[in-house]
Image (cartoon, rainbow, N blue to C red; front, top):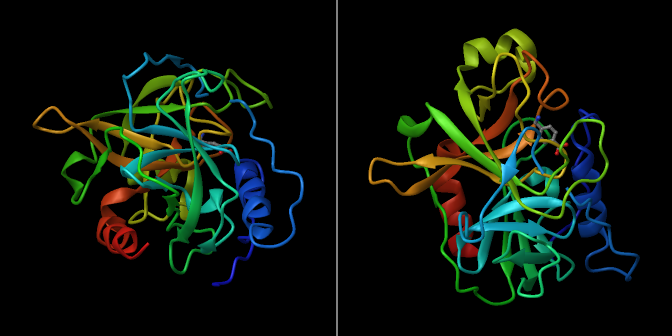
Length: 265
Ligand code: 4AZ
């Protein structure tokens, strides 16, 4: 049994899901306690996603998003989980846009692998192993920086505004343009870890990921017109504020680590 310790908290404004995940995992192999309640939640300035539009999208019971990396492995954010180790406490909901749908596929976790060395700054990725594979398409991850540009799609069940604590149970989607690190630094300064993080959003704000979207994918089409994941919803100063882009884990930086961790999970 490996250690399961709550992650260090920082940026309380935007990392509320972290604490929930930490609690969920911290108790994972200990005594049962009340399960952490997932905030029903979705993306500021978004529109409903169609059934089967993003079949790799999953919802995690601690109130985060994720994407199917393998049929039995979900890629999410490190700040959504409390550490690495065995846990059956996470329920993964797949195959639906409506979390209340009777056709939802629900699978329990067996293990979590959080990014080695994760300390709340950068490295915001984690893998969740499922009790059994689900028969749904996976989302390929970027292995180089060539797709870290252009316009990205984000999707999630997070809140629809910064001040909300609840949202829709339906999956929402939005598109947000790439923001270069040099511009992203205008707002975030040294809080941004450029090699570990990608920024996206409109200068005027209005469209963004928000609380509860964490761990979900940011993706675009590759040259072969297939979806490719370039980011993981990580943090930001509030949601959809002018001049404060959303911050995403830069997936290509960790593609090798993620592949090795998934193979070993
Ligand atoms: C959150 O609390 C969160 N605007 C996720 C993404 C963003 C802000 C907050 C980006 O999970």
